[in-house]
Image (cartoon, rainbow, N blue to C red; front, side, top):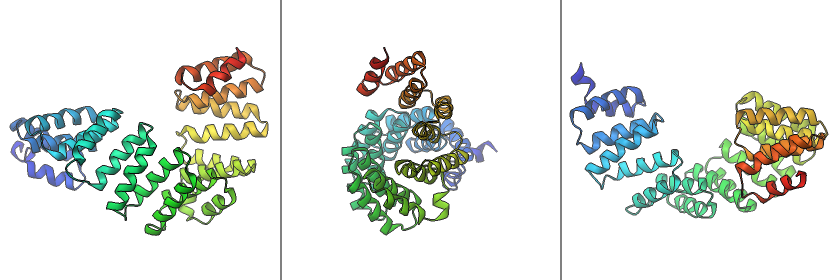
Length: 319
């Protein structure tokens, strides 16, 4: 039984079939029998990556590269691991080193996503566009490129990118929602709402779809409709803080301050590190006459984002 379990080929078959726990069993035993085979170490690391065990994946992939420094697949997988670990600078260097040999659209997208997570959306856009040239049928690249374009305020370009992607994948829900978001951010609120209302029902009833419709209604000052859609988003994904925060903002705009406070506090239960929500709660408490509570929440926002001048000025206004 041990011989069969440690069979490298059986591990590859399990990996190809998506049975990662079974593949891991095979590769662990195979690696214990032959610790200097770069391909076995790579397979072990890649399987850990698929299972989300990033530290174990990094160790195995580094062993593979120590044995065979030019193992390109191990290098690319290690770059993905570093990205998932939040080590974006290391990930970017590893992806760049891997791509020096060949422009592979999948890994170009990963490199672009790494720069996007680092906040360098201009460079991310450039890399996504290169990927789109090499693989023009990849709708995900169009969507991610549009997200980065929106981040740097190029909303019309983002909308155009989404429309190009939708020519390839007309029913792609992510692209449809992102198109509506781009239109909303560019001020074309009624067009944005029409895009969502004309989309598939399955798209409108996703968390992101309900959230986007709520955001558009809120910008149109149709607050009751916004509240309804934010509550829909909460039902679809009760563990995501964004719907609670957006609902809190809407309640504030309606003058329902106690309801808004409740939503902000729930959002912070889900993500205590969100400085913007601390700031929103502080402003809400100030409106309710709770200066001490507002000062505390503004302080938390500044502690979390000390370089944010907007948060700092808010704190100074109540100090």
